[in-house]
Image (cartoon, rainbow, N blue to C red; front, top):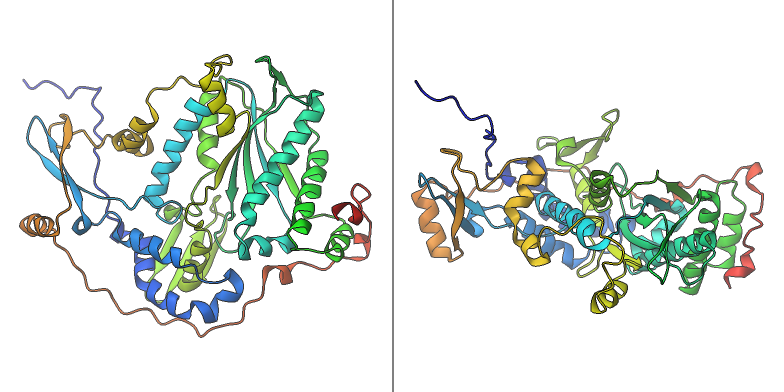
Length: 452
């Protein structure tokens, strides 16, 4: 009599992905050449000049997960079963697969190495539509936006704790998209300690937050920064003062306690999430259109494929630019000083580190297992242990192996899909509704002269 299958074995097995079969890949492959040719005429006014770095990102993405561009051999030590694992592009934001690995890795590292076992909150700071175009056309301002958000939070928490030397710890992530990728919507997602760290190693929890006061501080610091950069004038500030609703918005999430480890890691992943979800996207090659569902599934929008690609490219950060920054008690300088004096353990870590930084970055198998709940190093035949036995990068060797296995698939790319003729686009600030008669109420907190 055969023994029953052990109940502890996970019958899920890892299947190497095929990016060329996804709707997103087909859309990029079909439309990128046409998109690059018509960009200046159709999209430059709305999204700014075409950045050459975007071309490199897209070409790297089109090579991501394709066996003919290099692969690793993974073999089972028990039965000898083997499969090929294609190299990845390691591009953030534009490549969904590589960015998802980065998201999981970031969540683990942040909880294990940066944040402490104290209460935290999720804070979102948004700005009016009329100001967003400045950050689209001058990407360097995104760093200043992050700094303004931090300075507002620091002033707010320092005031409520009544200790000018105490500082909170914050991780500020810059996002430029909303539920739908079209449009440029710069805003800040912040993971901040709900209180301040003192020099003696103590932590004081903040009382109930006044979000209106935080909004006013953030508004003042951002407008003052834009004036100093020469982006706006006193007339713009006077116009904003006349609006009933300023356009600035503050979301203050519920308090996350130290024991809520899963919530903290989920939030850490959320603040650097990708601009879109492949599961919510459909691409129709015949019509050259993209359908995208909202997160709650209640709304579906249809985009021209070229417009969709232009929107996706607008969210790719410039080369070398970090979209997550660390301030206060969690800044790189502060953490480095504490490690030199062995003072970093005075306040217990939020999670005990399981792996070193280098090991965590290289352990792709563990990340995939955490994302998809399958282990890529479990043999699909006998459920034995598998390991990487070689990296193949020589073109002649790759071609010989792939042809022998019948995997040398070089498809002829179809003709670009014909698209609608160019249409006129108007800047985002033209869509801002004009103030009504009730909007001519001046905000008394910060007169226009305070910004000069």
